[in-house]
Length: 176
Image 1 (spheres, one colour):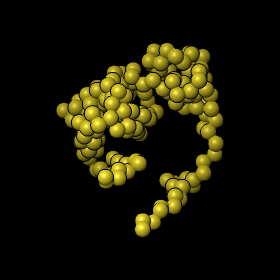
Image 2 (tube, rainbow, N blue to C red):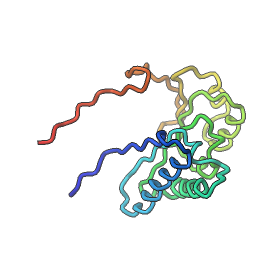
Image 3 (cartoon, rainbow, N blue to C red):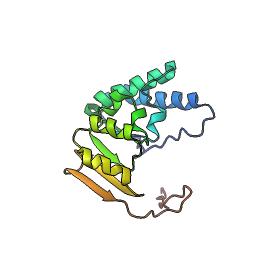
Image 4 (cartoon, rainbow, N blue to C red):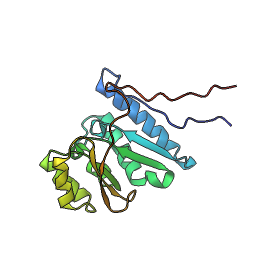
């Protein structure tokens, strides 16, 4: 049996043309969807998700990408495909994807429009707690949904890596 990686990171930030990164993202998502019946659990993390899941896709590639994300958001969990979306602007995420989110990790939100939409999308978070997000300082976060009991306000600890993209050193086992 060929071992599979525990994780794969696809950095789409290196493309010069934004359309190229969307084509690459679409290819990966289509592959994951086409192999969904294997029911191999996959967590799909999309940072800056508003760049790949617009509420108003304008090109054929953007429309296909958004349709694929809507389908994964709506049906993927039963096949072990889980979406983790990260964005600073939830109103710029397609509503059919955002509405499928069962869990929320919310950091500082400055936009009143985003707070209104979050309140409409996530009725399980009180409006009072959502409004507190406007005053969050760095590292403060609100967690809500099925992955926590109730709603939790949290303070992240100080970072353990240096600023500038450094990473924690992880020893790589040598093969024999």
